[in-house]
Amino acid sequence: MMNILVAPNSFKECADSVEIAEIINSILDKNTSYKVILRPLSDGGDGFLQVIKSLYNVTPIVYNIYDSNNNLSRDFCVLFDKNKKSLFIESAELFGLKVISASNRKPLKLNTVILGEILKNLVQDVEANKYEIENVWIGIGGTATIDFGIGALSKLGLMFYDLLENPVEPHPLYFITINKIENRIKQLPFLIKCIVDVETELIGNPGAIEIYGKQKGASENDLKIIKTGISTILEIISNNENFKIPDKLNGAGGGLAAGLNIFCDAESIPAKDFITDCILKDVNLNLIDAVITSEGSFDFQSFEGKGSGVILKLFQDKSVPIFLINGSTNLPSNTKLPENVFVINLMDLFKSKEESLNNYRAGIGKATQIVINKLNN
Image 1 (cartoon, rainbow, N blue to C red):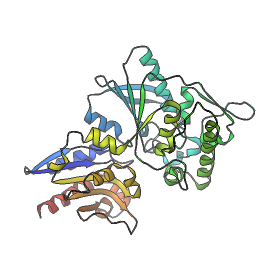
Image 2: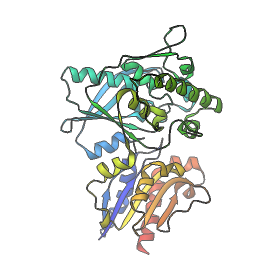
Image 3: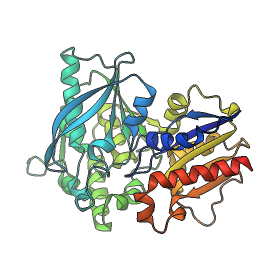
Image 4: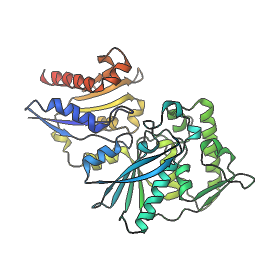
């Protein structure tokens, strides 16, 4: 009996990891000589809630909130585990690339207000003894925003003013005009734990703002405005002894985790720790004979804490074959993967990227058959 760990990460804006794992399993399951261990991954980005559903006994809680990023009211679902007294939120479902159209991806005018509204509702529900919540876990990744969490924090009591004492809207476009910050945030009745998918610092040369900003639709000029604005906020609070700025500001979610850390004492949990301590908690890696993982686009960012990169590191000292089923692979020419890692790109199985996206289920099926052929040889 061959033990095969199927631990795919999601294909951003395409398929979540649970769906990918199910497609792979539907083909492997036909072979009675395979024992398949399904552990769909989440690094905090797209599909985080789907993975939580597969791990815990959760019930949905729905809040109807006005979504200023899309100019409409929407139902937003979070998941509650009564036994663990934990609630789970996926930021990509609130203001991620998958819910904001390409034409509307303008980070200067997008923010995280929706998260603040949800947290505010949760505070009210906890204080009213509607739910008993000790920890709020937020998957931070796949966002279309670069607002340092300021939008969310503005709903919790953080106030911003310009030189003339006029209130400043919590959009990155206006951060540069902020001259004064008032902190009216009350202590939350629960702890916030942010699962972060990157280790890159928010402010750097380049930092996460520049590295990930373009994929969110920001121009070079937009990035300069955003970076200057966030730096302005940091300069103001650095002169206030009530705030503690960490030595390293995590760049996940456009600085969302970093902002929550500074103003709400949120804890940042690297995706690798969430994957090993929660998703793979009951899996004995020494008994695994082969691994199948995946990434929509496998590149240098994948080694910064993305799900598939975590799997590669966990098995780097083991000689088992690892199959990377990717939408595409884009590594620098001087980056070589270990000899036991086999890459299968869906783009290579179709005539175009668009065709591979439209037929991803068939593509994953074809890729899985390639894996089977290699395992049987």
